[in-house]
Length: 326
Image (cartoon, rainbow, N blue to C red; front, side, top):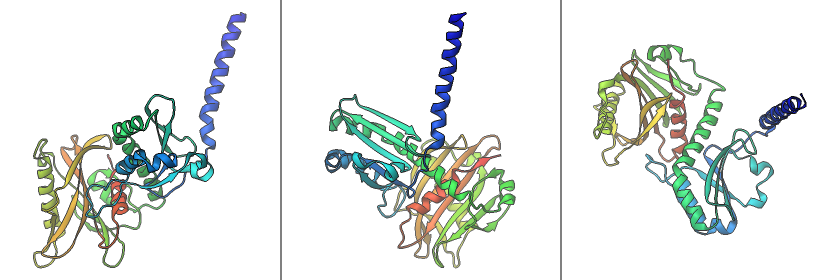
C-alpha cells in the first residue's frame, strides 16, 4: 500500500510539474519588432570576424525576384551581455554561442517572448559555428519566414475585405485586408488591387486552370510563364496593344513548396509592360488541387518605381499562404 501511495504521489508531482512548465509560457511578454527584422545575438568580436560575415551573407542576401538588391532580413546585432529586457523580446532571433559544447543548431519557440522563434547555433570554434550556419540555413530561414507570415496575417486579420462571393466562386478562403478592392470579377478570374499612391499599386490575381495546364518536369516553369502571360494579356490588357508579360531578360526562379497542405510551385521574377515603360516584381503560386482537377493560381505583383519592394511582395506572399481550399 505504501508503495502504491508513493507511485501516485510521483504521478501527481510529475503532472503538476508538466502543467507548471506549460503554464509558464502563458505569462511571457509579447514579442516585438518590425517585420523581417532579425536580431543577431553574438559577441562583437565574432560579429566583426568571419562568423559575422557568414551571418550577413546568409540572412542579408538579396531576395529572389527583385530588380534591386534588397536583403532577405534587416539585421541588428546585439552583444549577449545586453540581450535582456525589451531587446530579448525580438520575434526572430539568431543566437551564437561559442564555447565548450559540441556543434549544434536548435530552433526554439517562445523562449523569452511570445510568439518568438530563436535559432541557437553553438560550436567550439568559428569554423564549427560557420559550418552549422551553412548546414542549417534553409531550415532556419524557413522557420523565420513562417513566424513572420504568421505575424503579418495576425495584423491583416484585424480588418478583412468582404470577399465571400469571390471565395465561393473559387472554392477557397483567403485573408485580404480592407485596403484592397476587387477591380475585376469574373466566374473564374478575380483581380484585387491596393493603391500605394496615385500611380503605384499592389495587385493580386486569383484564378484557376485545368490541372493539365502545368506539366511536372523540366518544362514546369515554361508552362507557368506561358500561362501567366496568357492571362495578363487577355484579362488585364492595356490600350493600343499594351500588355503585361514576364520579362525575358530576367530568368524567373521556381521552388516547390506547400500551401494548405497541398503541393505547390512558387515562381518569382520580374514583369514588364510590352509597349510601355513599366515593370516590377511578381510572385506566382500554382497550388495543386487534385480533388477539383485544377491548379488554383494566386499571382501577386507590384508597380512601385523608386520604392523598395520586399515588404510589398512579402504582404502578397502572406495573403497567398493564407489560402485554404474548401
